[in-house]
Image (cartoon, rainbow, N blue to C red):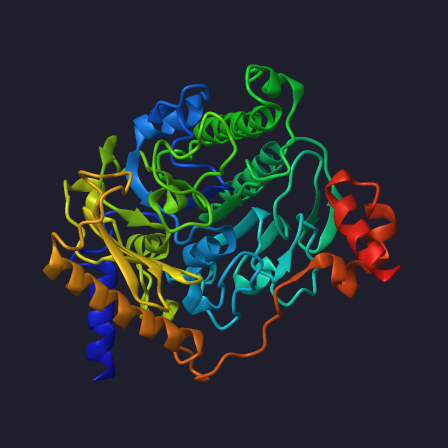
Length: 477
């Protein structure tokens, strides 16, 4: 009976598509994620002031998603969905600064098992710490190595120019833009593994364009007609795009581009109080379940397999692990079930317009369920308040059509409530072999973490840490 259940679950993940047996060698894999980049903030989406020539080149050479969704409207939950293929609440990551449970199975661990070298570069934000990014201790119970990464240059949260980071647990003080630093370090890792003829899985989680906004004078100059906050914000995105160009150019020089998958997206929707606006006319922003909070830029470039095209097929970060698993040939033992994502490999070479499995979201007391053109919104899960929108005719979600489509509204509402109950079971630990949740760190700010106190005297000189250290100092006086 168990084998039958697993077969059904795998069918829901992989669909009916065969494995990629025609590919003679394992493709290299690079996952790139920005921090707070809105759906409208790319050149290819016709942004009025931001040029992104390198993202545009990726989009022209790969599969561009016009409906790509972050797993959540905030950062840590989306990162959990990338690593597990599951909705964030199942994994215990309810909001930013929550720790990913060590009982979860991750894409990095799965790929490491089949021979990939694995590296993480940039923002981590899955070890329970909040506040500006600080270096992660080697003995941290939730550092990247605990989730399958061989090498890492990481910080706990957002980071900017001249960051203090942790390289496999050793604190390193670096100079340059955050994007430049992590791309260059990732490329050293990639070149080393290429010389060793090893496939690599490289995760690059950028710190831009998250607050506090910091950028070089040359990048700021491009946006001199904007207010100061917006200047710095867009300058960070310009620096990120330039680093994408460095990455793609180096892959070509190393003769790796053809059989390397680059999958790029943002971790949540755009910010408010940035001008021109960040979400391309969509409703809502970061922290909301409206389109502006969860729809983000998304591109896959894989020249040996994917021919350039644009798709409106809805895809989410929960689909990343199942898709890579389908390509590489992983099995059910690499997942914790239920898995909320599916493999989207069939759309690489086929024109598929309809998605069979709906995309679910839950963040605090908000929720959503996307069924192709239609989107159910839970404005209050606890009070069972729902609305229904047609995203094809009403992408800005202005007309609630629940009374016009009563049957569909009822069906989707019932499915969401049933799914919501399954998430409650997952959150309680019933998906794990222990049937309970083992100990994980509580979400907290690093300025109250005693492990970091010895560094306060030196770190108070750093602009990114000064405010947090002064807060705790004042509280003790």
